[in-house]
Length: 172
Image (cartoon, rainbow, N blue to C red; front, side, top):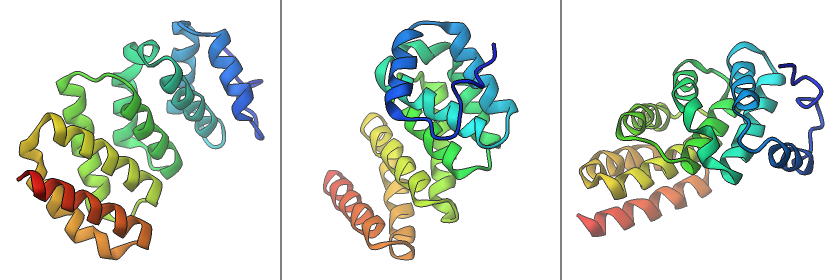
């Protein structure tokens, strides 16, 4: 399936929302978008993941069959904008424990490295915060990573990290 007419520079959110609404539930379109993310270079892969991010927000169950390939891509992707949007997708869909565990490992790695852009790190923090609610035994490790990273980045990052540290230390 050729998605090149859709994945163009200057792609507007309105167009994406219309495209997702028209193709709701179409597994072939979703599969083609995932394939574009995996096989294409910029800007096509960035546009494809942007469409999937919006799809995940509008119809998260539609993405369930393609979550494992997206998780695999998360492990090999080097483009921070694609990683940021993949993490955003994982925040909006329902994951099984195995999938969540694989993403948890990557989220901790992204946060620990301190070398990814702030969007990746914020989405990693959101994912880890959500996961800590489900698995409270992750809280000490999460708090430790936040303490190490909080003063190395922007004031906004520092404020968010401090807020989460305070929140989770109260729960301990």
